[in-house]
Amino acid sequence: MGEPHDHRVLVPVDVLGGQSVPETIVETFASIPVVVLGYHEIPDQTVPDQARAEHEQQAQAELEELRTMFETAGCEVTTRLVFTHDRFKTFERVALELDCDAVLIPNPAPILERILVAIRGDTNVDYIARLVATVLAGTEIDVTLFHVASSDESRERGRELLETAASTLVEQGVERDRIDIEIVAGAPTDAIFEAASDHDLIVAGESRPSIRRLIFRDRAERIAKRTVDPVLVIRGAYLESNAAKANDEPTESS
Image (cartoon, rainbow, N blue to C red; front, side, top):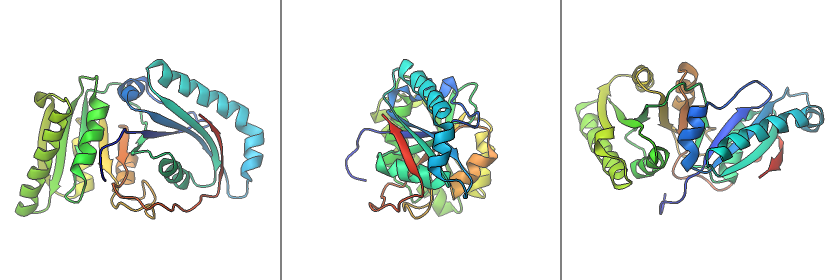
């Protein structure tokens, strides 16, 4: 990925669908610049300009309330409002355009005391650990570094990855007694889902570092659909630079 850089998280919210961002999430992510993407998915036959003319005032008001929530918590906030035919394409395009490291699915989070970080064998451990350390900054949240092993060799490699991640977290100021390491066997998605029952936020990476694989159309999406916890999807460490244009036109405020 290159040298570490300041992180930024995309927070997509269906502003006309009654979706909200839990206060616990706002407080936890206050140390990271966020892009709050207010979106409304429209039918294929509806022209975005038509939807904007009918709903922009209400949607913009909801988006401004979200901006105020994050700013009150001390967060640096950028906002965008989009009427789109495909929310996943929009998430991906905006994340790429605004250099967002991750996308947060803000499911309900009554409490946020422990997060689960799923680390695979092909992931950029340093990249993930540094972003997680930024999330943990200024909080007392504990973290479980989690790996699903398919063999004894995979288990040993997984332990090395988790220990590396733990060392990076400690270097970034996270106390070692806040960090647990867990390695299990089984189907990755099922194992992560089972472990998630004892945690309040899941951190997972994209299955492949390519923008051709739309965000969430992989293991991370299945996890997000099967859990009531918020899910932070960390984008692939190496992204292509030429994103395909989505079929929507954003109304932007920042």
